[in-house]
Image 1 (cartoon, one colour):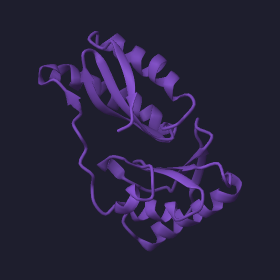
Image 2 (cartoon, one colour):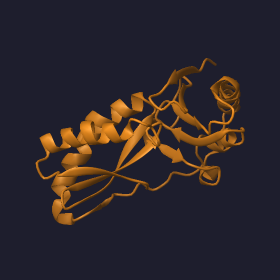
Image 3 (cartoon, rainbow, N blue to C red):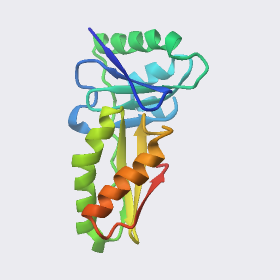
Image 4 (cartoon, rainbow, N blue to C red):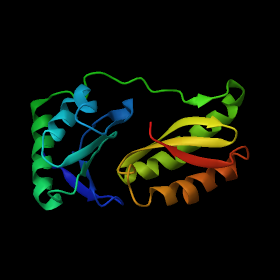
Length: 186
């Protein structure tokens, strides 16, 4: 089994591509702690390594964030070994699916929300997945779109600029009802 590794805009995060589906089309999963990762044998195995602070599972990739203690030179081979061992054993990536929240919005704004979600799904999410992350819709109230950043995007130094100058400008252009975009933690 050959696993490719790519850097991300977040220097603490590496993207691992095992050459097979991780979450497939079933979505993504973001784990900010070992406790949160209990439903995922793969994420739990990765959190068992010293120095891991976050694990994100995408369609065909895994992003792992290190805590800055060991550095990637020491940690990378351990992560590669854990991922390879997991897939070679044929263990499931996640045991149970997590219910994806619809987000907080006024039902009267359902058509606007659908436009926002469509733009996020077709124009934004593929781009951030390329960098090892995801952006998830969490709400729309009074012209403010609330988004949650996951994976390499969470904690990335350039994420605020991406949200304000990229996502916000694009949404305002296509959906005049959007006034601004805010990052939320869940």
